[in-house]
Length: 310
Image 1: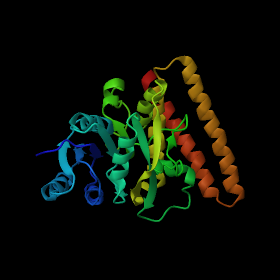
Image 2: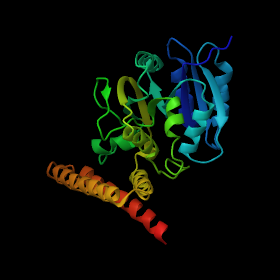
Image 3: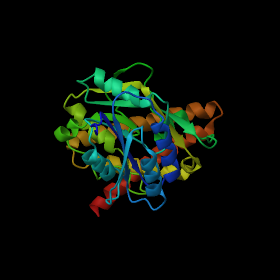
């Protein structure tokens, strides 16, 4: 007899077969009560992603049910939306394809949603695991770019301006029926590092006073390799953030656009203060990178606006 899953883990992946294999290996070792499915959504990978997925499908007997689907429309939001449509469980857990977890990770999520039936969405803690040496210029303020997400050790509502990170977030499936899917204009598309699709989605929930809860014991380690520890990668991420910001504000009222510009100006001021702090404490490279990061965001924002007006 086939049991309906209590939890569907959606892993969207693009050309990261080796990391995916490691992620699946950690997940199938988990101990939990209930029924879990793992849904691998392949977003047009050209490496051995398919073979890796079926290798685990063929040997998955006592562990979670593993399924493999492809999404031909390029983009993380398209892949996530495909996963939502394919998932069979009432609770969906979105995970990155390059993570490691402890053996009670899935049980932590299952227990949380079972004990909190009125909570529609939540986010777990994410720590960073550096597979290569951390550059001197990479300050703690840039770690969220690499997935770092830590609001402490207590279960609590998210602060007003915070929201779950996409690499470790649990959402009841019914919420997507009420509020719609992820915006396909946002999110990564192949090697284009646009972003903010989960932020835009969670803002819809916040505007409707839907509670979002932080769950620290549902923790993952997000692996970071040398390709992500380059200034060029940070630049591409920053430009993508700026472009995503421009996409989000273009249809908002003028007053909202002014608020967005004011918020970005405040972040500029904070970056300048941090630059001065790092400089006087003989860590100039960290401060200089923060200023460059802020400029790259502005470049992405202005380039998108210019393209729309031309």
